[in-house]
Length: 314
View 1: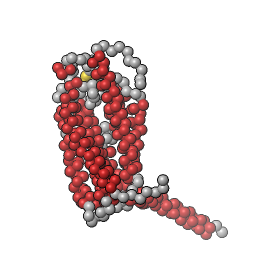
View 2 (view 1 turned 90 degrees about the vertical axis):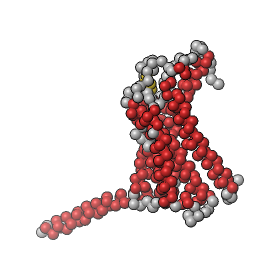
View 3 (view 1 turned 180 degrees about the horizontal axis):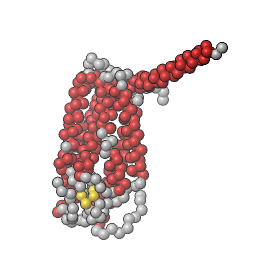
View 4 (view 1 turned 135 degrees about the vertical axis):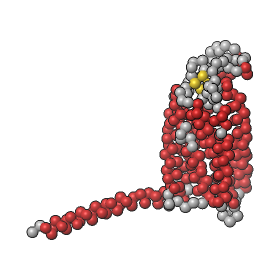
């Protein structure tokens, strides 16, 4: 597929293509901080999950898959930050498509696994059913469910490799996965509309139902304008470009929120778990053992040297 160049297509013939606007400089740096923090916390979580001290159950399986979905954005994070700083995509088309694929799997994967964690906790904790009465407490069933979710996530991201394209504007700046791409407007609208229903509306309906279920569970209560804008040509074009610029800013702000969520997920769903904290303490204790053994050996060698020197001295 060739890179789109030239004037806007016929669907935008009544207006001129809007020039891209620079983002606030704080957004890229916030993304750097959150992406780095999320990478470190999720890496530590995956190391704990892979340790022998971790005892696996259905809840741990869901937390493990949530950590993997948060890590999916790591390969795309440098490209997201650089593109937000440069406002230009100097890389190849495949990397642009890979960025869209990883972002889609990361965002909707987090939504799906957070939904499953909520269902798991509602069915095993809020309703007090116990492991024998809830299928969500069966690790084998949860593994199959997570496998089905990953298959759906990979399938929904495949269209990016065949349909996503870049665009070179009048300033010779290449756009990738941007609202300033008139050649991708129909694809963005159709894809987001289809995925929005399955990936956002359905999970939020599930959350609403779970909140209603949890609300029925008895809980013991303890204790008691902006300034005016300058002239901007035709009114409809001015409004269109202003809305597009704001949408682009909120688009990257959502990246920042998503990156912050990568930091919150390990803290809320991993480090808050007693089982996870127990495994973390066991891993740290095992890591300290070699140093203790080494220090004990050094002390023993020093004692032997002292004994030998005392015997040789007349």
